[in-house]
Image 1 (cartoon, rainbow, N blue to C red):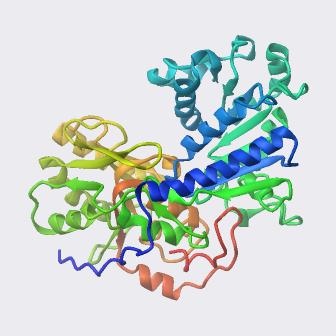
Image 2 (tube, one colour):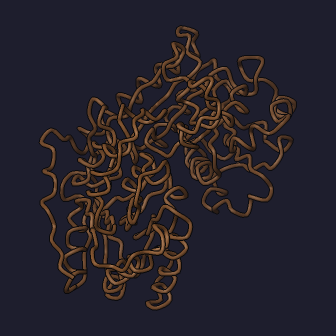
Image 3 (cartoon, rainbow, N blue to C red):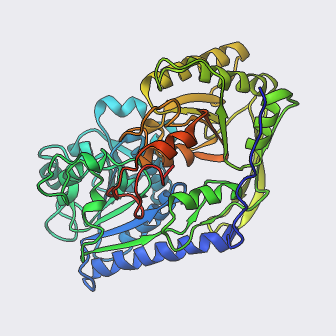
Length: 481
């Protein structure tokens, strides 16, 4: 295999890092807090506050800050916090519990989901599986939209806790985490729990469904299956502000992040050059060239030619065989990552080193594919590698892109959504699917595809439209990809 890399994009000269970057987020979050407090005070007629973010912008930190600010106001005695999935609610419950204390924070969870709650969350919260079991000391109640929005749940909450300071509803503020993943019809089930909603989330996430598939075509502005904030962003009773910095990526990834959020006034990166690194073992051949590129932090696209034709775009064992050949020497010989830690204001602290022999925190390598058959094959590949080298948990796993939304890992190895495709369709060309694929990694991105992406994009007709809920105007999918 002969590998030739083209020169990467030059790092932006105007980029801010460390506390200079994080300062922008602090200012934007303060604007959102000010709008929230003004609404509680009655000085502003807002029904909703939206804090919009790019991937890895520290949304949860901002949400916790806003919860704390709301509860400190005399017109707020109790808040609800919701999201679409338990994997979003559980870690947020732990953060709020550590911040406010277990007596003040209740995780409201379905009984059959209780075994899934991590112990470090259980240690810091109260837990209830029914409204009648919620402690009356709780100022924060967290649950999925399906749990909090269940039929009759509002009345059961009122029966147990009574109305909040507003004297009518169980909560004074409803916070929605990962708001751009919550469909409008699910938001409708929880909207009435509080007079004021605060949505925090990544506008580049996959919408609940493609807005182009709106079955309510007689009213193109309405689609109950799209992300709920898109129905209100232009509403005069909605305050919206963007977080202008990201904490997740390396400095070398910033041009890619900016490409996905190109119409924002600016986007900076807390990590500075040299703050993150991948330590490689001695490698030879193609693996040495590929991993040396990934280790720079620059997003790397590897197009592979000369393979037999695939059975289908999502059934491509030959391309996955190339991925396995590249991963084998890396996993066999071991590797490490280093990262600079920061305080809450983005100021650098000590450096942390994690090895593949003793992984901790986020997974070190995640293999992402877009379709179920492809991820089934990737999972089988990962299981072979784990068994062959007796790898500890946390070194490598496989997932669909859609399932990995909101998750973080050190190195992403992804099969490009358009790899092997002979045309562009709603699924393989979705902006959100590409954005999620490219924005999970803290240290390195390797995108693998069959050769011919440029030809596909050059020859395929553009599919015009501005998908609802996506940042900025674009004619998809050629310009996106």
